[in-house]
Image (cartoon, rainbow, N blue to C red; front, side, top):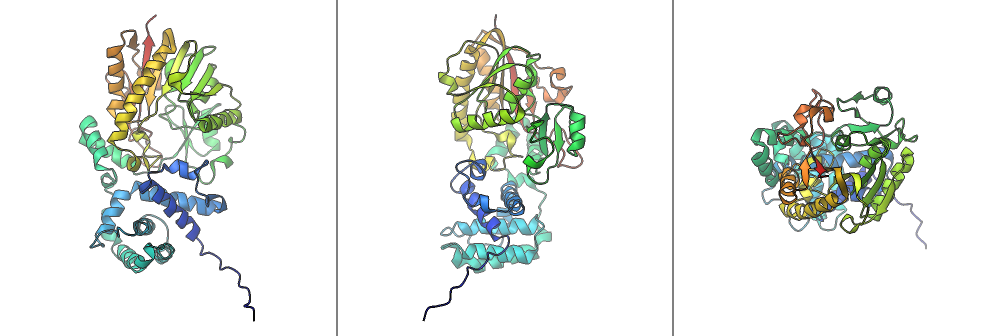
Length: 445
């Protein structure tokens, strides 16, 4: 007798979001895959399209919370693990991290956080044997939540980074950077029209630098002004280097390593004849899509800057590949993906790109070099080395007037240096900006 057909059991609500969050966290922590690559593009997690908007938002918040508070989470959990995290089942640690994050910081009932975490463990061949351990540890986390020092965000910065920042900026500033990195940032927008009007429509505010800052709920594509190309997403610090050229109307400008195109859009909107270069065809395709939405024009090419031959330009903007340690607020995977070895490799590439950028600048023209890094080797030291080896290049010091009166953004050498704790606000959701370095240089006539 044939067995009656049974329909598949519906999945427990919220489990898919947590399973995908666990997969992506494993990608960051064990396979060193960038978070952005796992959330969009060709390498995106295959389960994302099936997630409802609410579950997608939960998944993102879970991942961000674990990465921002990874040091604290590991410290808390280790107190309940006599033998440490199971080495033979790495998924167990990921499940525990997600469960504890929900209990300590997210608005999730304890019983739901524990139950769903146990289900995640049971679904993994190797972690399944530790489902009982997951249940016991997370229950103890919930029972003892009031005893944990959850405000100590310094613990969430890898020791190698904290040592670097302390050596360069001093211990107090280093701790302020770590604290700022622990807060989820607001959404920063560069607008084409009246900033005050758009701030009102977007329920945001205008920063001293002209950027509109808002706290977005839901998909960015649904915000007013997106479809008509009235603005683009760009951190307040990232918007500053393009302002350092002054009047660009009618000038030929090269934007090197340009994708995804925020600075390209600024230059084009300022009236420049822009040529934007990036070596990644996929990133150039995205840049073109962004320009099309904004109704802005630039010549775009997918080429290696080091091999590109062109007539020198009136102005050149080089936003060089870097360690991105100034963007940890927005990219909490960065400190767990990068190391000092990568910085050494990147500084060699930056030196080559700087020399090429100088060659692409007309005599008497202006070159702006910038990186979203807090590391002196990629910023201050890179410029000092360039000036030492090339007598035909001179620094054109940046003044407070160049950066909307924000004199604390200017270093003693006349370069731009922003830190994540700058532009403070009583509500940390509204404060801060990316850590950025920029130098303005002139090639001798």
